[in-house]
Length: 341
Image 1 (spheres, one colour):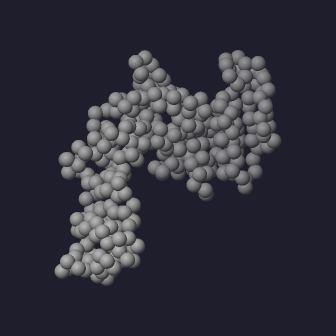
Image 2: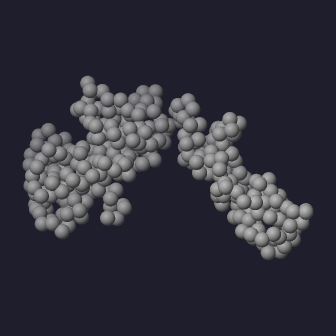
Image 3: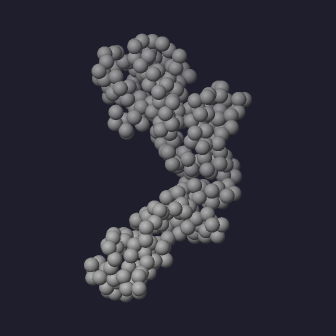
């Protein structure tokens, strides 16, 4: 199965858990008033079961029984009046005992695999989530639910999202900028067009001071198992490069990170067994499988003697090369990993 399609299936698992008939043993159903979500669910189900034979129907409920034009030729449409329907809503339905059994197996399988948790949450939030903005810049993500659900909490816990459940109001509440960052990283609110617009409007209005104490420092340290520049970290955390650089310098003073300068850019890492060098310096190392003089290396690489000497001495400071009798350079064996940028 195509990886992108697998994510769509995960989203539909979330949609169905939020707005489907999860107790039915005879049919697959999905209810929503967002045509984009109904279209996603219908097309995904049709693709999953494309070799099966089954009938599909769409029921449209509206206050006046109005006709909603839909581009499907493989469905039976039925229209009903529902006086309380402020906006027309649709129920997509596949009646099949065998298919609901197969669909339930897919759902169980996806709920066991952490790789699909973001897509499942994306679907579930599209169905049951909402975004609330209050006075004094308060921003809250909510997931409506009458009772606590283990699968929801398992997904939130696994993704590092902090939450509270309020039984009186029948919803999960998610605050704190760090949680909004996770929602932004995985585009959790993007499946529903209205919720997507509202989420990004609120998220982009956050100010830097909404980061909790030590949040930025701890998050940067977590990422630095591989090298990053201060500019890259600035883009990731939506903070100024000056603020990120300040954090990195403090981490270096605490002996928690090292920095290596490559092409006038500092790259930072918390991996003490890592040395970061440029492609040019790596070329010198590859040429030193046999001893060579500075002049010989300069001639092969196509630079002057002075430039070659500077690169070699920089490698010497990193304890990667040494010079014998002031003439011939040798490579020094190292157990450290060399990261070439």
